[in-house]
Length: 477
Image 1 (cartoon, rainbow, N blue to C red):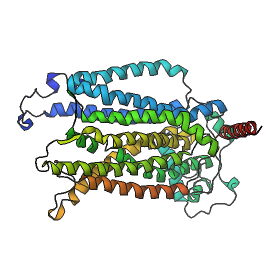
Image 2 (image 1 turned 45 degrees about the vertical axis):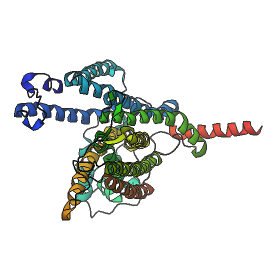
Image 3 (image 1 turned 120 degrees about the horizontal axis):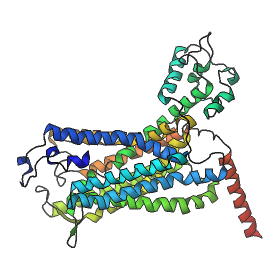
Image 4 (image 1 turned 180 degrees about the vertical axis):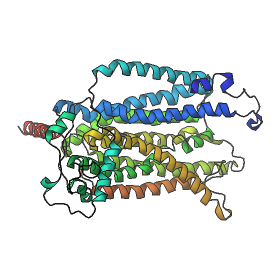
């Protein structure tokens, strides 16, 4: 639909050669309808594919096989690597084609790519490991919450064996796992306390179903802590690019498209993922004896710290850009500042480094910590944070812009960036990230990791410890 909306004369406004774009003929309701329906269809499709592609990929590894379990620990690194290879193509070659060749080819190439992807996916489907559907996750969680509320006055027995639970055979038939009762969120345990003869699923739920709901709810504070970093990611294609339009973009006769700087985020991430997986993990394993090198929450925390550093650097860079603009009398005119666009590279490159820690760990964390029957919903937590981050970014931008214009002030964010104060806005983001880091630290202190469904992770840790001892003995001998 996007390709057709920029190709067919009947679906797009006529070409305009006016220097003043306000004099051009506007798009008709039909043109806008086709274009926006295409965009929202793309959004809906992405919401369906993103959480499930990574989930079905991780599901191909057997948790009960130590070797496959060790491969699974690297899966999300390489999955993200492959995703960003596509992003690199989009931010470099595809952007250049759209700017210099045309939007028809610019949209036709992704359309062709998606067609090939569908063919590959269908060809591989018979060979995948498939998990049996277990019904609506949200309905199962709603049943637990409703049942607990309906029995809010019922005391929870001290002995977990008195709680209602299905036989092991029932779970074996469905290919799922039974979970033992845990002490957290005790109020929800009321859902599996028998009261009267009612066996309605909205009145009585098994322990496993309650524990699944607990686990999904326990991850919500971590989910909230990732909203602010996701809002930072939104700056890559908004304010960072707008900054680039005010700078000198020439390399000889070639003019660098500002949006193409996002390719450096991708390149940085690709390099960091390889270094992390091949070297960093192996080095940290020697110190932590953790098969992952460091825990997923520690990896996310490092990413948040890097976000603080990014915003501090961005603030000082913008401050320098404004200083040069003032020195050259470009504040009122909003003219091009005589500085290379590549002064923005540090903030773009560090954003890729932050993603290699935070974004990869985030998707692995929500997949890994979700119950076995709710993996795709767990993974969707990570994509939800990106959506919320974009909304949060828009909200902060409009709110700060409005507030800073009050009482006769010019405001921090104007159409003329040379008159704006993005340096203050980025400093505000640095402070916001710091507060978010404190919040993240607090919620992670109380977070308890989900028990593994198999002992393979313990076997990996034991094997790693034995290797370390063996190497140490050899060195001594």
